[in-house]
Image (cartoon, rainbow, N blue to C red; front, side, top):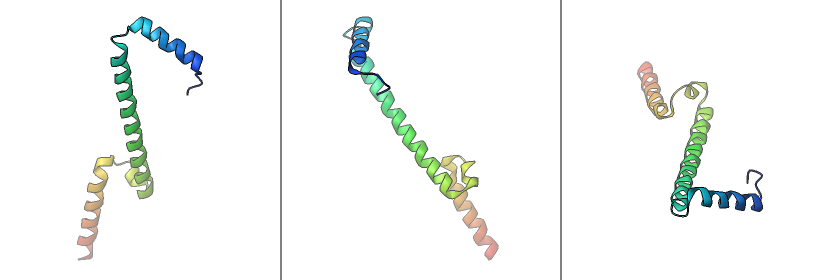
Length: 84
C-alpha cells in the first residue's frame, strides 16, 4: 500500500488523531472513503468508455461518450436513406 508499512501507518494515524481530534477523525475518514469510492467508480466508467471507443474506431474516440449512441443512430439512418 504505497510502500507504507504498519509502523508508518500507526504513526500517521496517531498524528492524525492528535491534530484532528477524536470527534472529527471519523467524519474525515468517512469523507475520504466516499471520495475514494467515487474516484474508483469514475475510473471504471472511464475505462469502460475508453474500451468502447477503441472498439468503435478513431471517430468514436473524438466523440464525447454520451453522444456516441446518437452518432451511431444518425449514421445508420443516413446510410439507410442512401440505399432507398
